[in-house]
Amino acid sequence: MPDPTERPARHAAEDETAAPATPPGRSLRDLGRALLRPSASHILLAAVLLVFGVGVGTQLTTKAADDPYATARRADLIQLLDTATTETSRLEAEIAQLKTTRDKLQSGVDGAKVAQAEAQNRLDNLAILNGTVGATGPGIRVVVYDPGQKVSASTLLDAVEEFRDAGAEVIEINDSIRVVASTWFAGANGSVVADRTAITWPMVIDVIGEGHALEEAARFRGGLVSQVQQLGGSVTITQETSVRITAVRSLPQNQYARPA
Image 1 (cartoon, rainbow, N blue to C red):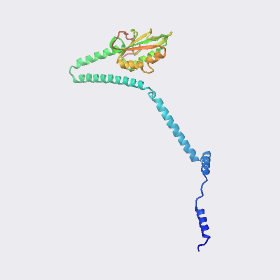
Image 2 (cartoon, helix red, strand yellow; image 1 turned 90 degrees about the vertical axis):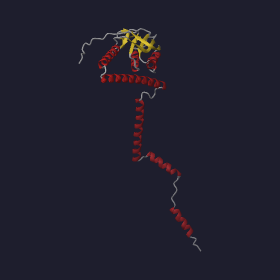
Image 3 (tube, rainbow, N blue to C red; image 1 turned 180 degrees about the horizontal axis):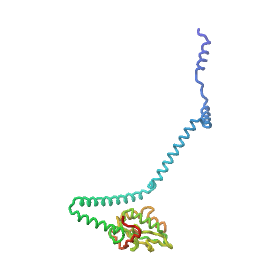
Image 4 (cartoon, rainbow, N blue to C red; image 1 turned 60 degrees about the vertical axis):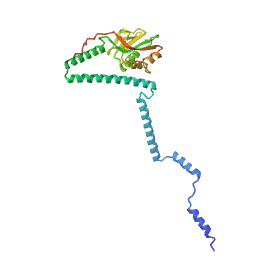
């Protein structure tokens, strides 16, 4: 017959070996204590994560600030692409022409005639760039209306630079001012002056170059059209197959510079 004392003893042994149950609230109290009294390893880990987060945030902010096209509108990006494509095509055509001239000079066939024609071509181009001869070609006519005479010299200078960036080869203002590399703009007594000549309104700008690219350069957000409109004026642009520029200027005599 089994000993009645064995059963209670066995259950007592099982109770001793069983793991004590953790009260539900104890883990939360331990977590709260750990947060209030962090160890050195916790502090080090938090510092590393903080430095990493600051570095990533700074890098993203710098990248966004360095990209001027990040906030540009889709229409503006398309205009920039069209202008760049047109300029690329023009440069590729110029490269092809120069390669053809080089091949003719290297072949030795009528080398003297080719060299003379190339020299004359360069002379003609330099005369156009210097503004000493008239010019004709496709381009645009821009008429700027400024009833309040608020358009400044800096606005006009920005417009000239935008036209040049879009491939403008010749620029003329009011049929009398030939814009060249040395042309300057200033404000005087409430009016705009270009090369010592006061500009009258409405102002007419004739530009020779690829018409579409030139017009897009003027209509680009922040360009001539939007700036004049913000000042209460208006701008009309007409693409023309033949723009004739007659204003010329004489070459100044250098006072100090001499050929090296």
